[in-house]
Length: 595
Image 1 (cartoon, rainbow, N blue to C red):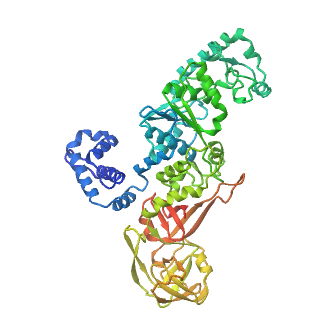
Image 2: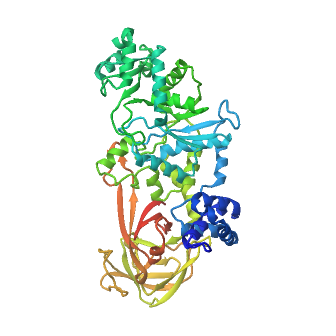
Image 3: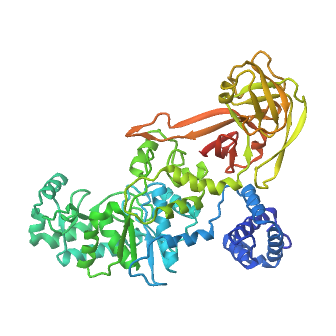
């Protein structure tokens, strides 16, 4: 508050955005009480100023509710282009998923357990969305549990990135915790497992361990029970150095499923942990932490990808040995795309070697990159739910995700002209100075813009290359022309300065033939010389061609766009006519989303 009797402009903007979000989510009508509670939740410091805050909220609600739903969406996209609103209707899509076995309404607990060792990607989005859909379908709860039991991999940056990614997707976990919160409890259960004969401390070297496991032969550490107690004490009291000993499950060394051949459950790792610092040296593996945490947290249905299929017997065997409750296990296929690595093991080296420019590089499948590229969270949710809970390993085409996104962005994206590799065009009998008004969308009222034109334009190089003398062409939204002469060169320096007159030594000459529409007439976009703004568009392509890194995976095309684009905020999604949807990434730069 700027004073006890007024509401400053910054807070008014916050209120306006909250009102618009609430109105759009509920069919165009925001509710005062919801806006008040969300405003206080976002700014707790305003709680003591409700007397002047509530009247301001009521005024804002009244103004926003007087607009049509489409007008609200356009206004929201204009003032908050980097924010997105989860569609409440999408919740019903959860009914397309199969029913959970043994599920009781109001008594379902699911969990999403990412490791904070990188930024979340579309594979994480699939898992998190499915987990949340089931929790909401059964009026249950969703746990966000960071699987942070390897201090060499975890970073605070990654915890934050995962939270931000889920928030962008519109996923609201009911409980947030870290596996590391329970480290002492997990170690206690590890000791117990050894004491009841279900595990043992092994001091064999890694090569020896691998060799014996491959042959199905137990090692001396398993067979010699006289040292079990002493080894257990030393393992947990810090006597062993890293890699000098591990704690292994006592499984069946002859099992055809090698995951049951005495796998490692605890190891010694020295490193600074983002949450625990240097206080701990003994860390559980995922094989041990996952079933223990699921059981102790009250998870009723544990959903995970099919890659863990062979480890399911181990999951349940550990709980059986410790006499702990067993959740219901369900599996689904990983989400992968051709030419796009959905794996942090593949993404990290690309970043470390400078082959991509960070976690939000538009060629990556990370949520940060997908958001920057112009995909909306509603489209991702609809796409994920369209896949169902299948175990099929087929890779869906990326175009399927684009199709869902296109349906959402099309009615809310203004249309502008952009010409790539521009060539000059002069209309000999065209108006030298004229102002034209163009609609921002052909079918929906998204406003309009005014453009000064003369008889000189830029057109796209591809269009210019196909033009022949005598061709009749429509300059879109303007008039028809007939080509009289072709003697052009591509503009070589986009960022150079140009005058409002055409260079008669290098251009296409045409004559205006009228403004009547002919359905069979070719139509091309244009940019008026007086209104041209140098513009760049980054076009992401497949990172890999088969198994090889694609050195041409990021193309930058140069050209001219209408100057109107410079008035739009970063994050705004637009459509360049006959080019495709793009998201404004910075000054005079966009990223191509899709056609």
